Image (cartoon, rainbow, N blue to C red; front, top):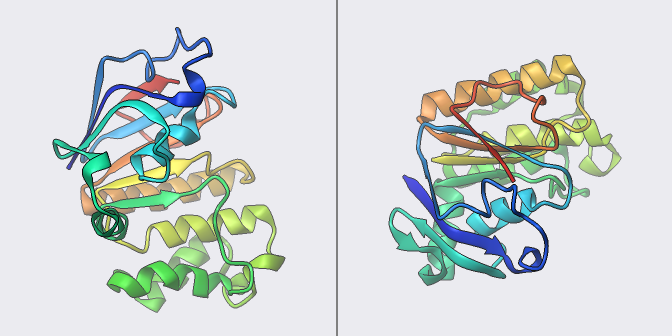
Length: 215
């Protein structure tokens, strides 16, 4: 699977200085399955906007986004839904968990669509990320760091060609960052997938990346 960006820029950024951006100043960028892309910049430079555009959540942009050579704006709602079910998985910066559901129920919302993981595999991932005792607690009472780990596991419980990870380590210590990275590395390697990973800092690097871009 490929994602090609052609002279892409979100409309709110057209009036700001983005002369140092390797994303918004590019004539064309091509992301392919198997790549690990690290995207970094200070807040407000458009990292979340980039992932949201690729995922089909935002349409306020100039330029083109091509999925396997086809313009994203031409996809029907049904086709975008299919992309999100089978091709794109997204770890949102805001997590997007349902507070009234348990951690496990939030994870199963994705997993039930494709049955990619068994309950035992989910429990094993929770053990690695040190939250097994929280699986049956409602998400609304969990700390933000605990929620981040739930969101990471949820995103890994579906097939994908691209994993979009938006500042996912903000409330994790170095130990948990390393363990989360190990899970992500294992899953993208097994699926032969690509990773688009955003961060505030160039030094916030716990995975091996094939390319880096400054937004």
